[in-house]
Amino acid sequence: MSNVGNNKDNGGDNTIEHDKKVGFSGRSGVRLFEAMTLRGLHVRNRVWMPPMCMYSASARDGKPTPFHYQHYVSRAMGGFGMVIAEATAVSPTGRISPCDVGLWNDDQVAAWRWIVDDVKAAGAAFGVQLSHAGRKASTGCFAIGHENATVPRDQGGWPTVAPSAIPFGEYAEPRELTIDEIHGIEDEFRHAAERAVSAGFQMIQLHAAHGYLISQFLDPLSNQRRDEYGGALANRMRFLVEIVDAVRAVIPDGMPLTVRVSATDWATNGWNLEETIETARVLKDHGVDLIDVSTGGIVSGVSIPVRPNYQVPFAAAIRHDVDIPVTAVGLITKPKQAEKILRAGKADAIEIGRAALRDPYWPLRAAHRLGLGTDLIAYPQQYVRGAFRD
Ligand SMILES: Cc1cc2nc3c(=O)[nH]c(=O)nc-3n(C[C@H](O)[C@H](O)[C@H](O)COP(=O)(O)O)c2cc1C
Image (tube, rainbow, N blue to C red; front, side):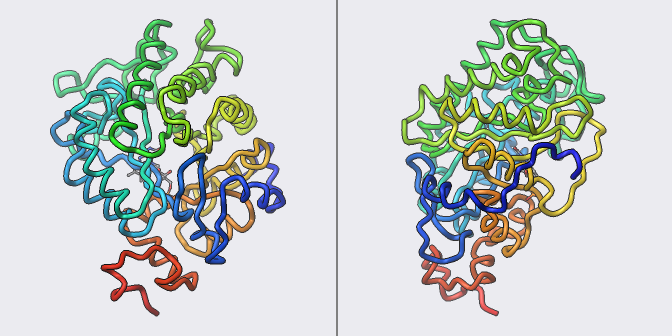
């Protein structure tokens, strides 16, 4: 990881300070299963499920379906402390694909509510990732074909928008947004956040990673505007900061607001860790409670050194330099691996993505592997007789 840059991982020196802030309960002795408090939200442990698009709003109306109910409620039953619902579009044109879920109308609020109620009843906290895909919108998915390509207009695709008229790889060229349109999208984020609160979600995450619209504004390679939304970093982060302010103003004081970032685009002259840290400092001042640290997705065709823990140094650097809670994600698949990251003070919670797709009970299995019996973790009563055993 030679291009990690200003990675000041201090091996845990600041862990205690952070523990005070996020409220370690200290009862189980295993950090992964110690509760935390994020702003006003109690989270039962530090194993979180990150947002993962399921592209399964089959009626193409942005409404989650019984599939989503099963998908999210089973992970809550499986012991995750926080479940974060997939990239949820703030407008129809902000969808990555026609099969994305959304929160741009009240029917969608009603469709989310029963899922939210039962995820919470199963003991998990439930957050939602609000997203606009910008130049990466209107693409296909397994449900409709055209995967990793623009969906033709006659098959339900739509024109895309971006900070500048620069396409992502082979995708269709987007149209540059006007200032009024930028403000309009900020309003869409605000309204989607209000709907998320009304659906019962307990945490809002803004998707500022992976080359979607907010990250297109941040990255100098995709943002070549000459107005107040382009150029210097303070201008490129303006769209994100204005969305943070708009959302913070309409959600309850005790509700955590988090931002998922790509800490680097892995490209020469692109977005990097130093700019991420500078942005995270501003976000913290504007009431963001946690940074969810991912990388990549902004520029096509770059090589990413994907291996276990490959994004952890970025999370550790942001946690240390900005003094803000972070989650680490990316090929963290084993309980001891996750526990070690927390003990080293490199993150406040761990996100388990693809491993959770193959094993909804990952947290309960991990608790067993780390020596915690059903008396020490929140085990579903109905499942105690079938608890993991050696
Ligand atoms: C099927 C799938 C869908 C994903 N969708 C999203 C998404 O909606 N939003 C997001 O920020 N990341 C998304 N990701 C990235 C994951 O949240 C996670 O960062 C990534 O899979 C790395 O973690 P892992 O190695 O534990 O899977 C997705 C990943 C997968 C596998």
